[in-house]
Length: 568
Image 1: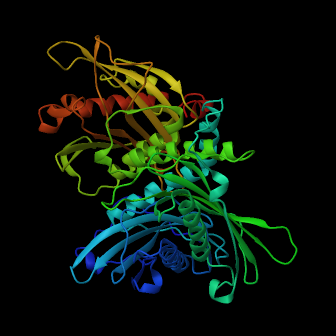
Image 2 (image 1 turned 135 degrees about the vertical axis):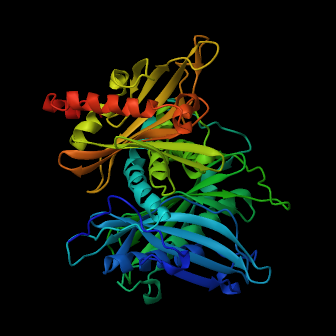
Image 3 (image 1 turned 180 degrees about the vertical axis):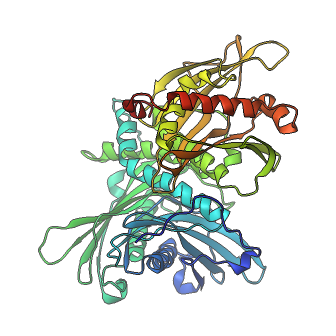
């Protein structure tokens, strides 16, 4: 029977070295010449094998049974590793679902002679348990703030993986309809870069389950991709990024694995190589077992990316691959600037468009989850069971207001997720209009608030509201808010355009008719004037607002049952 997830409070060890995650597995390898390429750098294929092996052992430690690699998320390699240096790999299970689990992998490099260490890359892999005694995987019990954050955000990453195919379809469907494959005189035909290679799966290539080792397949794929990239640039390329590896089917000892690679598109300083792996035995029809897309650069003597030749797509399927490569580049940029960067590096108002909606929504919810997972909140004020907490770190002020209400969590979520009704209880919401109902979970609002400046101009905000129901028992309902920009709603002279970086509600079910409501806000300059007096203890505005909210919830808790499904 699955363990219950914690509702409140995290165990913070007095000394970090006394606690170690039970699923954590470490591997350290010194890079030998047999592991390196012609430049004396660790082969990425070898690194992928080590990463997959370490992550698999972590997954099996948690599951208590054999596990197989289902996918590996995007990997961006920040540095190369030289012969004689040490590779340190650490893997641990971030979260378990019914039969799958996310394993976080961190790779660092150590120079023993210079006594230095630096990050090389990190990745998230999904493993599937082949069978468990209890029918489904036991839940991960986060014990530290870092583990709680990864546990919480893992659900958002899983959601994004499931939507990846839809994102590509939407991006291609909304892209240019004409033929954007320009024909340049100096373009290199993509057929020249095509590579095909076959490998016979032998016992040393298999794991302890007699299936072909996932890391071995990834290494073979990286090898043919590197050859394809070299044929375009007539030089030795450097692998920078791998888009998601997706294992579609297993292969076994005795199979023939056919690996195919071709350059799909070449940009100014980078190129995308598509790779697929097929397996067959005897005369049977080859079956598709894996695919990935790898981005390469060619570095000059100073280590800067050099310009690359243009590519001419091959007939028939070439134009499709050419356009899809452009779409994937757009997705990579969105992920890099919206997801991968630190929360403090994300601009306050990111331009919203359909192609980056999923990533903005991910960032929106993840930022709220990370804020909620913090454990060093300081109680600033308490009045009639309404508590105000503050958190000041790295010159950023955050606050949390928290109380309990005797209303079902699902009903509270339905009422608070409809921002157009917030003006009924929040005096700071003078007007709220829904601009765009993006989907069932996300909407964009235009909010007008009272004046807080000497000009007597009110403020307005363009907010993306992202709502999530619990993924597992013990998870809260979430309503995450952040500022976005829309070309249709630019700043006007009538209002001062304000911005919200991270705000929202967490609604945790305590019992069938009691829930804990927490409101979080990372105070931006546009928000601080509204709450500065409360934090300084000169006002009880937060208390009055939450009392009004409680009254609003109480008055509407018996509304028609269908209302639960009207808002997100």
